[in-house]
Image (cartoon, rainbow, N blue to C red):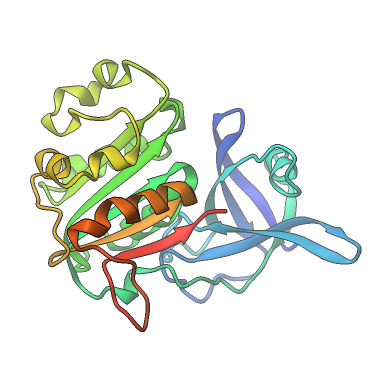
Length: 263
């Protein structure tokens, strides 16, 4: 395996959570679709590349690097070594970008809800960077990101700035589950839309609570949801919203909920 890329930037949020930019040796000529992933690797085992898939957080208009949000998995074959990669470290990246998790299956949307846990926020950041709030892909967008501790809220400042400039067309809802009192202590607590920022992402997807927080009805006739992250969260959301008329999307049976399970 020949390394064909190098680390050019990184930001550590916690001892095991970081965002990294990787510049390939090859030219980034083809635009990927926001929501897709790349394969990264450092090592081989028995002649086979040990690779893992990571959603791209950068916009397809960025031609100098790919950006990824990564969590170190203790005992994992790849992330502990990736975590040790400092600036200048070389590694391997697959030049072919893959994945079918995108807005293309939903067309132009009235209301879109991005629901993520942890680093599952990455594909949605790519979408927001690519399309913006005036990109013509939706009328209103909501991004919900659930984490355990507030220092795990990736892209928080960027998303708050986007919300500030969106003139009501974008709502950012960070949810913290294991830090009692965070909501009251957060500067965002002064906003009416931040009445509930503790617990799990499922809490704010109760239709009545969602409507009160966002000011828009959670209705399958006008809303598409994109879920990315912990499979348990995804199953809980499917169970929660099923009785309200939401169903998982497939090619044969179009629905309202699009999925990307992270492990």
